Amino acid sequence: MDLQPLISVRTNPAVKPPWYADLVIYEVYVRAFRDSNGDGIGDLPGLADRIGYIRDLGITAIWLLPIFPSPLRDDGYDISDFRDVHPDLGTLDDFRKLLDRAHAAGIRVITDLVVNHTSDQHPWFRSARNGPGHPFHDYYVWSPTPDRFAGTRIIFSDTERSNWTWEPQCRLHYWHRFYAHQPDLNYDNPEVRREMLEIVRFWLDLGVDGFRVDAAPYLFEREGTTCENLPETHAFLKEIRKVADTYSPPRVLLAEANQPPAHLAPYFGSGDEFHLAFHFPLMPAMFLAIHREDSKPLLEVLQATPSLPDGCQWAMFLRNHDELTLESIAEADRAYMFDTYAGAKEMRLNLGIRRRLWPLMQGGRRQIELLYGLILSLPGCALLYYGDEIGMGDDLRLGDRNGVRTPMQWSTGLNAGFSEAAPERLYAPVISDPEYHYAGRNVDSHERTPTSFLNWLRRMIKVHRADPLFRGSKMRVLYTDNPKVFAFVREREGQAVLCLNNLSRYIQPARVDLHEWRGRVPVDLIGGAALPSVGNDPVLFTIAPHYFYWFRLEQR
Ligand code: OTU
Image (cartoon, rainbow, N blue to C red; front, side, top):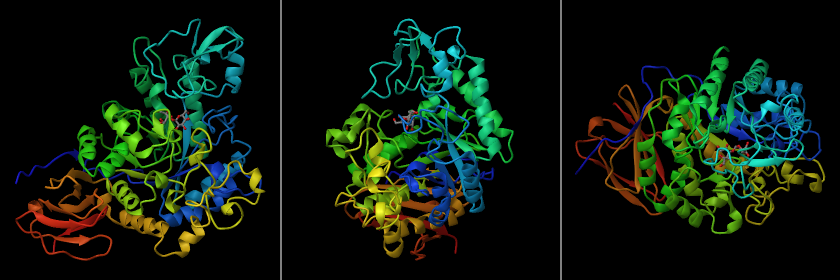
């Protein structure tokens, strides 16, 4: 049999993994989480009150979607004041209290840092639009004609026709990579760079543990380029890193760079830019692999995945608050994903699919368990999107990405226990379609049911956190004779955990070459059962449909 050692996603075994290398991150939309004052909108005190729930899930860091003052035309990614909290959500003081509560529970707090643009309601833009000579005019990018930087793609292609919008007040066009109400900041202006670094210090001084840096690739524009991933942009991101490094312990930077692997690597610099980056290419590959029942999409992405500089790691995720983006994958794969997971047109948005995890997988619990098994065993941090742990559904009647941002479901009570407000006053309706009704999908019910998904996930996170090999160790893909089975080891200094994933809906046999661990005993990390010791021949495993195994290869 042809046995080949394959790809490795390396992290240096000599270096002790830093605090952020293996976070289990919970992404929270504060507006959606828990309303403490009965106005129908989730808020910071509400979130602070539920930190215990998050801790019990096994979470070690929360990432908050933007909490700043904003006209909310892009759910807070349109910021009108970088140094305050949106009054709907509370006050700066509430934020400090949240930090204290989270830190006391051993949970780090990462906030969104939106560097690329502001709201058109930000005082900078309100002044800038009056024309050249007015304060802050040069904080934005202007042009008399809408034809500069013509090589730049349009990201919000469903709503925007151009990256330029006419500003009648000063009779110039301004540049924006996202909605027209989100003008891009002009990073060629040293004042803009200085302001942004001060904003970074403002939040770090307050005590946040790091930032998820929104839309990182788009800061600078240069004629004749795609205006993405430019050297100037990387240089400024390194400036942010320098500021973060002046704090002790150093604060963490997590890149939102929705790019293919080759462009993603530079965001780590030589260990002097981002500590973490979302693995955007792997995300759709997991959905492709499970539907095609083939490990090839995973192997291809991992093969293209660059080695990381020391002190850097990936953040693996299945879903987040946005559409399931298909921007950076091959066209044929994109078409396949649309056909498979977004049969109805209303499920599509820009180059993505606006659905939550459970409806995407048609409620297939085994498939969903397998997907979580993957992100909890692959190298790096694992991200969970609020509500997915209780099988929340989505609401396609709500526009844009709002259908995946509905209120968290706590109980069978009024408004699913999210708020005491009259139901019609909620910022968004709770999910009440028969299939995903909150009566069956809520924290209380899940907690009471030993076999619930929530309880399953808690156990898996516990197993994941308890094993040192899931922390900072190297990953190596193993050869099997069955492409439906994706096999790899996490290994360090002779210790190894073997991870086997059956991507098929049917039972599968797979021979795995384990001769380098001859004499070791595979012990199931979850149940503790020991298998016969490894001999010279490839070991035959028989794996149930959509099942995964984690075996420690123990020396006995
Ligand atoms: C990000 O999104 C946020 O996650 C969105 O919620 C915001 O609307 C957007 O920025 C504007 O602030 O930066 O690199 O394709 O990856 O929309 C792309 C989906 C982004 C996201 C994309 C994005």
